[in-house]
Length: 316
Image (tube, rainbow, N blue to C red):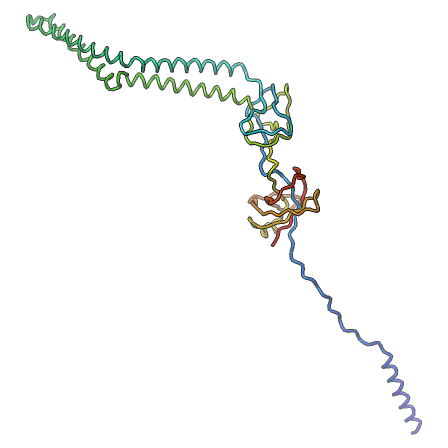
């Protein structure tokens, strides 16, 4: 019995010692998390806010290129010329002659107004005199011959009065003849202007003001209508085009939304801006449906160049 008590005591002590040596269970550590706002960042490309490819509306041979790359031009300035076909020059000359003749006819009608009015009044007076004489002869002898003379005199008088009425209504000008002459002049001028526009189409004028870039022609070459011969760009104002907004991201962007732009070539500078346009029509790129957004910049930098790539962050 005594041995059992000793054994029990030893067993209890051993159990206590083993319990003290067992490893303690660790409590789970909750890691601190920092909430990151959702950022929408896309790639974009820098382009002038205003630029235009210039092209002729006709085909022909280049005879002059009047500008060089880097030149500044104004709207309406002639920048290149094509050789004008001989047939176009002949057509213009013929129409110009017709305009001169038609204008002369109108001027003659207007210049003769006073003479026409005076002559018409004189014709009425003379016709009335013939009627009076014929009437006296008929009253003296009512023969068939005198009757015919009287009838002719009366008809002549009515005709003269009709002419006088026409000229009095038109202040000495036959309105119908004047209208016909003016219509001829209008037709001739329209034809001349059309011929002139054909000649003008062989002369290319700047449709916008700015700096000339990308000249693609030289004298002696033959080009087709619509071929972009050069580009004129305004390098004062710039914008960003980003064409990789997916259908998931485009719904997160709105016109007027603020953005921050960092050009790859100028990583130390951040430019602010805002979305000015989001295209309604999609493009498919590498299997994704994408949309293009246009962003106007609030600041400019003289180091900016056409085509520079940029990172665009759309601000919440």
